[in-house]
View 1: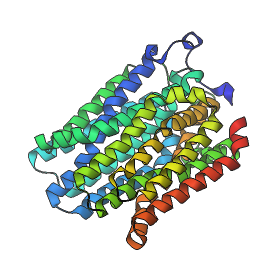
View 2: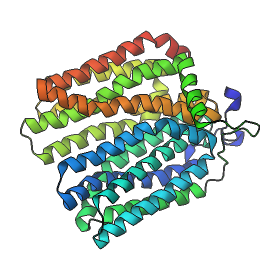
View 3: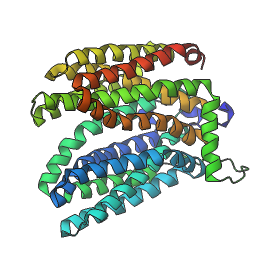
View 4: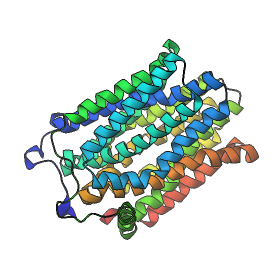
Length: 411
């Protein structure tokens, strides 16, 4: 399997990532693009509320995008493996530029019906999933194998930074004009398109002598590859409950603090504090990875998270209940980047998109269910019961890690 890997030339083995032209272009373009995406995440529900005044419709828009991202995950991985990944990213960026430019113009002219907003948001979500599958898979073709964990750590920092900067910027731009956030997002995708276009290294994962196969066959091959790997099975058993817990505890915090009478501004600041924990962890993720081997880092991270989520549960209703959650997120970027770096380093380039998509699907599907389940538990059992649900999910993840520690150690 390792023989099929496509990585940076040997001359770049010792060069730091900041001197890797192709990776720097990709990282910089995606930094701008993710800030634009974070701006739109806030602007979409505000637009629906301002045009139609329905919180239900605003929520339905977010649900539509979440469902599309889950449903399209496996096909996106298959497409990322059968097509040139650089070309895929260019096409996705061009589509998103067109979509958001059209939406911004329609809003500016006062002719943006709800159906058009939903259609554009849904189409953009499809492009997002396909782009992400190609972008995650192309990293191993741009950097040397030994630098994969560091490269994914930089991507983690980029994501957390965008999640912090995007919403405040989105609120400011929306105050300037309802169309401005969407035009800004179109510009961000244009920057991403240009950055990707200047990448020199080829990014075609298919072998020249490979026979054409159906999309169904390609997706099934990715699933079979994951099922046949003890390491990847262990990863999924750990990732699904812990991602449910991480999503659930953050959503629970919002509901608990709101129910306790805290103002929306206080709740927003609390959420920001949680994101800061992840951002700080992402900035030192590469250093943390060098301190512990992967299996020990994973055990430590989940055990610490279990302790801190339990502490947050005991503090439920108080503003500083988010402090333990923020600390719990500190090790998450190191684990995520080490995990994706390991998957990329041991998986053949021709199947990376599908393998990563299967792993991501297991995590995102569980995380997407968290708000619904937590909401039901809050409705019937209260905020502390909802927090206890996330504690149980974290404990389940820790048990999965401990049961698979030999597999994780020898992977």
